[in-house]
Amino acid sequence: MKISIYILILIISAAVAIGWSWKRLLDFNTYKKPFLEGVALQFLFLVIASIWWLVTEDISNGIMGVFYYLVAFLVIMVIHGYVLHYLFSKKKKEVSE
Image 1 (spheres, rainbow, N blue to C red):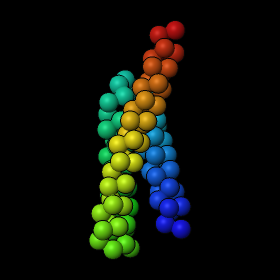
Image 2 (image 1 turned 90 degrees about the horizontal axis):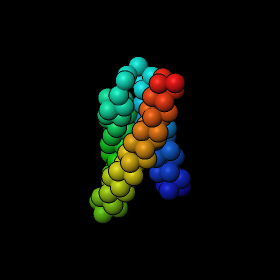
Image 3 (image 1 turned 120 degrees about the horizontal axis):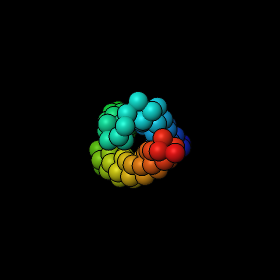
């Protein structure tokens, strides 16, 4: 049950971060600010999830859960950057044509 909640939280976190950044990308000529906003939103979401994990598990499993969230945060952040870079280059190409 815990692993399904963990995966659900990761999927929601990634979707919210990428969705927010995609929405904000339309307002800016660079993808730096939308990327940072999405990463901050994702970080906040995963910090809350890490606190939940610490509260619901004992200390050794809680620390490992926080480590898992940290690794997931880094992986999602890289995927998020690639997606935004692709969307920004696509937007830039459409504007130049």
